[in-house]
Amino acid sequence: VPTTLNSVSTDRQRWKQLSVPEEYAQNSIALGDAYLDLGCQPSFTCAPYLLPDPPQAGQDICWGESNAVVYANSVLGARTEKYADYLDICAAIVGKTI
Image 1 (cartoon, rainbow, N blue to C red):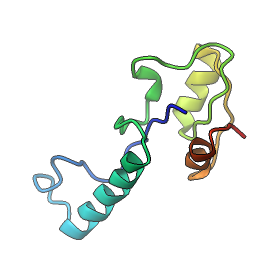
Image 2: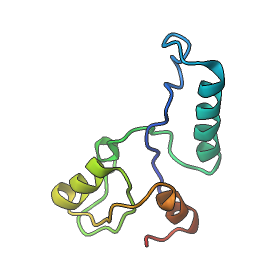
Image 3: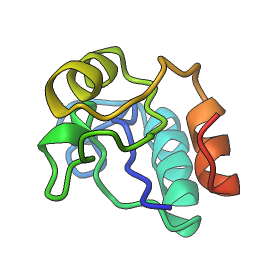
């Protein structure tokens, strides 16, 4: 199941320049890395519809980001509910939308 990632709470490359505390940055990076280890695409965006190969009309998807849900349903013609945090990654793990 193709799985994109929403933004994480820390800029993965510039956290030092942005004066993000190291412990906070490392925890955020570790979370992102765990998703990458599961096979997620390294997209890190709240606008997955802008990535190459967006969902097609009529395709069932499982997105949780509010703006992405509206765009998918109204512009792309794909179908998704507004899924709660972590329910979307559960759908990716089991390979089914809910």
